[in-house]
Length: 144
Image (cartoon, rainbow, N blue to C red; front, side, top):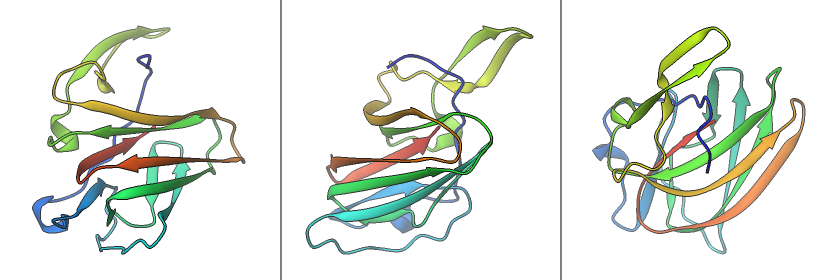
């Protein structure tokens, strides 16, 4: 995966949201609750410029169908990382763009503290994309 200007979202204390056989998705101020999956979990995610809103922040481990809709004004992608780090503590890298150096927003996906699982490649504003991913029990961070 390449390094792009990716925006990470945060949530409060994580330990309260984990199930022994589940995983936690870290979201932007969304309440956490458990979801029991029979043949897989559907997880709807809304991507808005500078924000990401998953419909829930925990789910049962196993197959998860990430259904993302881009209601923003620009291209977005959805990245899935496995990590025990809080989103505020994810390893970052500096990068240069047209206006100079950008720091603090680009996640270093090659750092040993994170495990890139999968992603939905960039897709246009006003469109939907989905991807079915198998997730083992653990903590995951979603960002775009």
